[in-house]
Length: 309
Image (cartoon, rainbow, N blue to C red):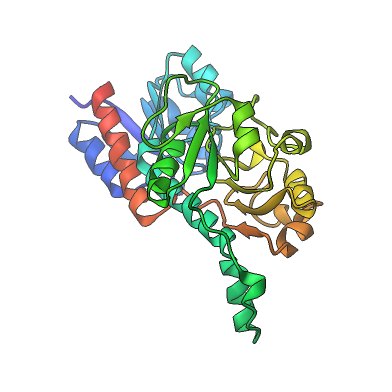
């Protein structure tokens, strides 16, 4: 007798389907299923696997009368009502180990691009302008990198930086004693005082929503480069743009935005300033989404499923 049925509602690497089936689960891989269709059939499943397709909220969890686990193919759990799920005794599984290297490399790439004006220099040469002085960059060596959040993603970024001869400091409100060979644990006050670079690696919660605002940025002592590969809603985009105009932020690499996708993005009051700023580098929430992480995320979920069941 099998262990029960699992519903995959998003695009996952076949490694999950194959691995879960080998563990004795009956897997229904339906990446095109709608939320409405899911609501009508979810009572027949003990597990659901999702990336970002739709919210796993109270309505869906209440409809899932036999659900034992929710697997999030990625790191963040902000599209899942995890408090209600836990109240129902439902196990939550995520896979930050699967895309931590992708995020660490993406953040490093954004930082190097910003510090060396890669995008602007490329545009100028394509436009017939050869301007060495305007594209003179900064070296990473000797700089202090401030990391907010030292989980899988923050540590991955610190590890990627280890060969650049930088001083990496990290603050994590929910951890202590985490200093290692890649980063030194410090207070938020030290992050504010010392950082030449600030990089966010924290989940989106009610506490972190709009954390980086005008007041927060005001306190930083030195002009800095800013990287966000976490969640867009953590940052007030207008505050970042204002800090760029005031030269408090020398450059911003944003893989995530508080409003994402079109046409909603174009309707934001800050959109024009964002896309016309030469000191902003934008990518479409792909920091953790590589060909490699696509596979590794599924493999991590299977390993965790095996441990849980």
